[in-house]
Length: 128
Length: 369
Image 1 (tube, rainbow over the protein chains, first blue to last red):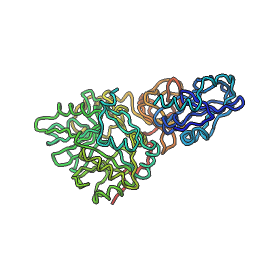
Image 2: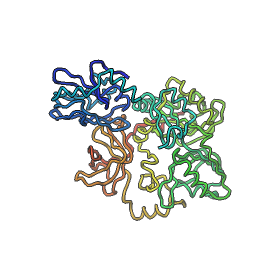
Image 3: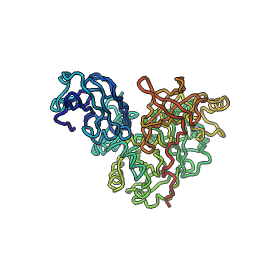
Image 4: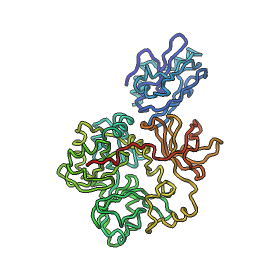
């Protein structure tokens, strides 16, 4: 399963790309593969406050509905509107075109609760 | 839930593993839910042609005059006027008029009947038939001798006729015996997808050879139960355990046209009473206003918040590009076009009540000759 080197990951299979107090968030290749074809996403609203590991997005695949949790706390400053019409982009490009939201981070120290790509790869092996 | 070792395996189990299918428990069987992707498999079936492993379904053979041997009184559809070489869909009911199973009956000879029932219900169906068939009937359960491959899609005739030259003589809902790979086998022009298609009943231990031959054809791709579920919901077809249950009557589940009141059958009294007094709930289609799909078990509400029913099946429809599903609602709220809301504690979504026949461009009745 593909991971990207400079991103941080959660145990619930979200990724976050931190740049200067802001961050882009999405779900990992493993998550999209497990969900199967993603058919619907309920995006958060710009201005929503999110908490680390709190629910902030729901996604549906042809098989099931699932929650996506925010890797860190902050305020939603942008969402990927393209996913409303084309949620399958998450399957095709989970780390790039399938990004979900941008967040203005409120506590940069929270990143110590996340895994590096290397740690996440090992975690994936351990969960089978 | 049964463990991996307790689940039944079809004769194509190793083929599915070789194709890297995702296997899931389904009605006591370990079945492929998807190979390459559910939507891709759905689209390939609608546009080209797919094969499905349906070997988990049960098959019975009954020998005898349909009235004298009691078969006619066990099923809801009429059998007396069914021509040899034709198939008919219907239900078997309990004394309370609830659905024990839905099934297709084939008249393969004047006094010989081939019955196809659901995989998960095969044992209870068998017990029901054995209890109610009369002396003179010869009942055989051939489920574990009979593998089954469905070939479905607008090009299914083109593919199958390269193996069975005269299969084009089959019209919709007819069946016959054909020579295929050295075997004399039953093929019916039936299916569960809404596309032109055939169901092939093949010797269990040789089903693998047929699968390999069919999949070797350039146009053919395998499709799993995930695609099959979307295809059947788009067509408005019921699934046992969802729209059909022992506490649901076929009238409530919209199957009135598969129930003949011109003959006697188990459960008829209760159905007549329901007909006379009117139904309190009825199956409807639910058409989502967006891509979010209704899910089994979710509730159906009016705009006022009043709960009027429950969702039985739902999916995202790739053909319609929106969420669709079925549910039971109180009869007074069952009119097509009525706005409703489906959902649960976590989410609510707008929809309208609609016909269950969501997809209307299927090739199932296409002429082949």
